[in-house]
Structure formats: structure tokens, C-alpha cells
Length: 264
Image (tube, rainbow, N blue to C red; front, side):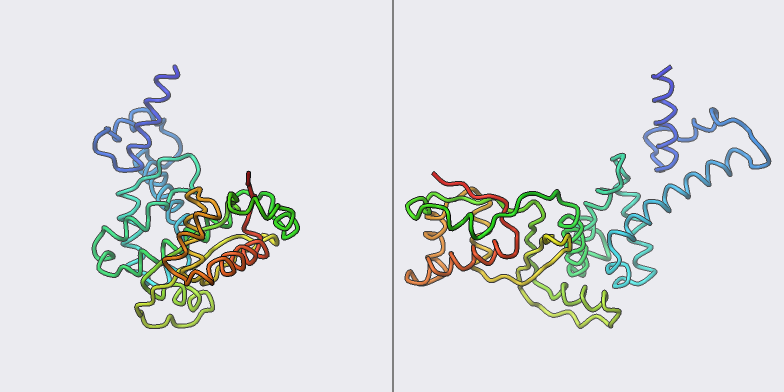
């Protein structure tokens, strides 16, 4: 019985997705006639409702993207994405995870790379907001570390921490759309943004400099404080490295993005 049920489920999903590799039309033979609505109409309602729910998911995840594209392009994007990347998970939370990749590869969207970047920024905001909450390191905890242990110090970031690097002013575009203003013209502006969810459960983002980007990357790679200071010599004069690294670390702690510190 369970095998037959699984087969019926596969046939129904094949019909909903328009999957030619499985005969979705076979499901018609297992739908009972009921009321005045014929089987084809009933199945059509299910199929339309399935697509509408997926479009609603993209709407929820990417409100600024839809406005930026306009109705026609946005409808085309939704239709093409749903056909190319049908939902593979019981939860719709991750349904649009591949949308930035799709926009980089699919015409006509790939001709305008800021579109994929805007989608990526919105997904990172969503990821930051949905991340688990954990302990946030305080200045007092940092100050309790023996000075001799600082070279071996490594840190873990709060799960909400995300890094967004882009060649375009897409964050300014996103902010204008959110404020219900006309988005600015596209310009090349290579900027790095740090995103996280603060202790008030609100998502924040701000521009960070090359030192912060390097430190973030090094710490995420598991490097300790001494290795990071060595790496910063490629960016800063030697006499500025330690002070700049400490100030960046303190700023992160004040922002609540450090989960824990280890040292030996």
C-alpha cells in the first residue's frame, strides 16, 4: 500500500511540475469524480495553486527585487525559475536559494549582474534574520583573557553574520526601494557589507573596510590572532596592525556578532 501511495504522490508531483520524465497524466486515473467540476479542471486548480504558492514565497523573500524588475520581467523570472528549479524540500524556506545563481545564468537577467546581486543581498538578509540565536561575547570576557594568550586566540561569529561583497550600488538601490523612492542609477561601487541580527532581533548591515573583511575571512578560516596580524601586514603598516586589529575586534563585540573566544 505504501508503495502505491508513493507512486501516486510522484505522479501528482510530476503533473504539478510538468515533469515529462514521469507521466503526470497517469494521476488522472486515480482521481475520483466528485461534484460538478471534472477531473481535468480540479487538477488544473491544484496545479495553479501550487505555482501561486511558490510565487508567493519569492514575493515574500524578495520584495525589492520584484519592484526593481517590474511586472513583466518579474513574472518571466518567476515562471522560468519555477520551471528550472522546482521545489525539492518540504519547507519553502529554501525554495529561492538558487535564485541569484539563476539570475546570473539566465537571459535576459544575466545581462544585468546587479539583478543577481540584489537577489543575493535579500537572501543574505533573510539568512541573517532566520539564524539561530546564541551567546554573544562581552568586553569583560575579552578583558579576562591573559595577555600571553592573545596570539593563540580564535573567535567564532554569531550564526547570523553574513558578508556581502558587490561591484554595484545595489544596497543603495535596495534602500531606496524600501523607502518607496526611485532607485538611483546603477554605478560601479565595490563595497563590502557586514550583515547580522542584533540582540534586539533586528537585522543590521553596514559597510566594512578591507581590514575588517580580511579579519573576518581569516577568523572564519580558523586562523588565530597572531596569524591574522601577520596577514594584515599586506594591508597596513606594521605599527598600525595591532591597534587596528584590536579596535575592529572590540567593535564586533560591541555589535554583538562574536559568539565565543578560544585560546590556549
